[in-house]
Each structure stands twice: as C-alpha cells, then as structure tokens.
Image (cartoon, rainbow, N blue to C red; front, side, top):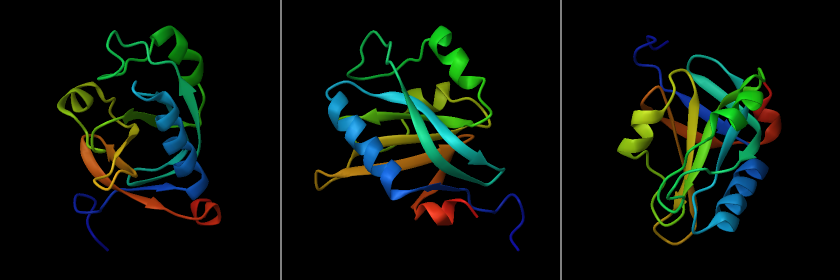
Length: 143
C-alpha cells in the first residue's frame, strides 16, 4: 500500500452530475458559474453526490468568480459541503494562479472548462494538488 505522501487523490463524479455541471457552465456563458459541491470526503478521496449553484458576484464575471460570504454562509454550514466548482467558459479546465491563491485548505475543487475539441472537461484539485477526476456510476460513488 502506498504511503500517505505518495497516495493519489481521487474525486468521483457520477455521469449525471458531470452532465449537469457542463450544462450549467454552458448556460452561464460567457460568465463563469460557481457553486458548492456536496458529497462525502476523506483525506485522499471524495464523492460528489450533488451541487448547489451560487451567484457569481465577481466584478468581472467573464474572467473570474467570487462567492459572497453572506450567501455562502448558510450553504457552508451543511456537513455535506465538500468543496466548490466554477467554470472557465472559454479556457481549459485548469487551476489558474488566482484559483490556487484563493482555495481553502481541506476542500475539493472542480473547474469546468473547454476541451480542445470544443466539448467540456473537468479538472479537480485538493489542497493545491491536482487530483484525478473519475466519472463513475452513482452506485460506485456510494461504496
């Protein structure tokens, strides 16, 4: 078994939630969409079971996102919040330097971006580390 330092982090997402995240990102274009990820999380793996959209209150929503603490507070109190998501409407699904500078330790993050061929792709990270995003059947998420 790999040591804790070498163990890969994995974020599991059911196909239906992946589809809904992609649709939300498309509907929000050209602005970035954002919200909270709900599910279950452990040190090296997490399972997304749903998400809650939140308004993007950034001054320049086409190139950034910002969650209003007053709107976020009632959502974050839930023990089901494991992280956050946002979109890059016309850019790849990569964590930007701004994203890395503002992430909260212990939370899981998903960015929804444009794939090279024009489709949608998801990328994830946790505590500043890129994670593998697995699209898995809902039953596999609830082990």
